[in-house]
Length: 358
Ligand code: PMP
Image (tube, rainbow, N blue to C red):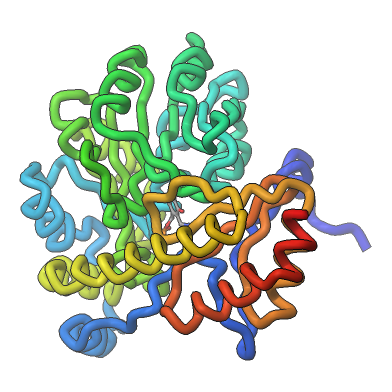
């Protein structure tokens, strides 16, 4: 039987690999929050569910207005997306048309960047992280050519957790030509605890080529509903709305995101517990002899090289799913204390240490 013609270049695109789940295992593989929705958010979800026979507001006006008010910007500066990953895709779609158009990003970084670039038929330019697993901002700037259309800067970086402060980011952004869009992907913004805490919305306020991505999936606990947003120049936002899949930010997601913004003080309070667990895990791992990247996110990165896959397997056998990345390293999400303890008892076991660090 002849099957339908599929673009042959898709063969070269790796499928997006999500963190594994297993009902009997602890999952520290997807950077989720373990806290359930707040009662006020669950109520908004239940109420919105009663209206799902109706399409949602395609312009997500109420949600975008609430986000605009939160950030002190105009509603024209805000786009909503079916998760911020959809906005990543849309950003490449609005900037790249020719195969020679380039999308620059660090590597390793968020694995959707190369995928959305290839799907758009553009060229991905990967710039290696520095020796501390952080963005090499000078190398990133040097990689920009007349063909560059977008630069993604993931701050904090997924999967290594490293983050740059305001001064470094501003120096980088100001070195980028004004016709190149700089996307500051701040999916893990709420977990940063830097003295020089960078806020992309502030950096972008006076720079029309800077756009910030935030999400309700992590600190706001709505990963299962799929809603994220962009704050940027109105012309960029208008273009995003042109390529947006109609109604892809659904009614329940819009209602839950609005309720979550209303409850933000309570939700952001929760990030302190996650940060405390992240730091506790890091200290225990360092004490056991691991090299651990300096994380400002809700996860940790162990650069275990070609032992990463084997380490992930051994951790799963000990009851905890973590996330190996090829021959680079393993990412472990900070979960509940008892889950983290289970991981630490595996990771710091002398047999594990001897096997993987010996
Ligand atoms: N950016 C980064 C850096 C991420 O790690 C993720 C989630 N893995 C996203 C964007 C997308 O998140 P969502 O689509 O759930 O908003």
